[in-house]
Image: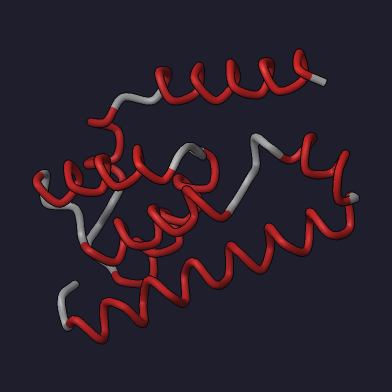
Length: 122
């Protein structure tokens, strides 16, 4: 079981290093709906610890990325587990894992849009 988790951690680290932070600034367009979807997709693929996501979110704000994109990114970073899919399927089953990831994707987008409307800052 430990080799399984080590493999997942190595895969996550490899993906985090392969995608430079400048990539993110070129992707977002300041469109509330498109940015929330893109932020959710990128956050879901770039999973990691919540502490790391807060640091990245702060850096994204400094680079001028929209709040909706950062919010969607942060929520999906922690809730969607594309890279942990195999481990989660092993423990909880394929059906549960798929449903949980789909719901997390949808709610990441909705939560990001709602938060931006509450704060009034795109």
